[in-house]
Length: 159
Image (cartoon, rainbow, N blue to C red; front, side, top):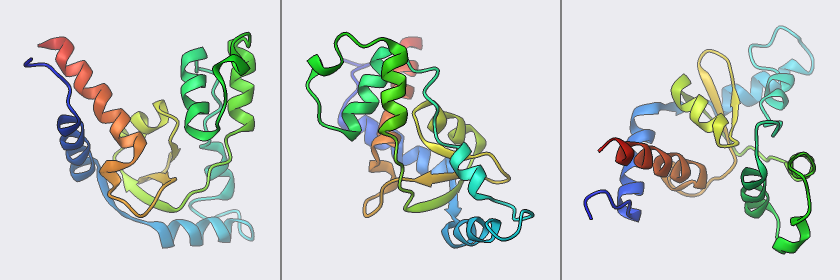
């Protein structure tokens, strides 16, 4: 099939995103600024900026919530079968304890895509992404793979 979305295509698209949309590592700068913000409210990036970037899940439907929870906790589908979307959104908030390992300067376009998929993005100049993984290629991060797959599906719809 011509429009079949394979693992290889997803990996290639994710690599293209990284090459084009991620500018540089700003980990030391961001951490220093966030730490300084506890003493000085004129710091360019503050602790409040970081925590405000955590997703609030209000735009997540039931499926989005279940997908998010499945990435973070082990549960049986029956545990949430009778839960409303609002109850699942609250469950997502309670299970969202992000641990940022690295900060990266990225394009605002990628920032929007990361936010749509639950990423932690600080709206500043430059846009900063709080990466919640490490020790592997950025293109292999689950969130980058998810964005790449969604883009490929969009492209396939126009073919």
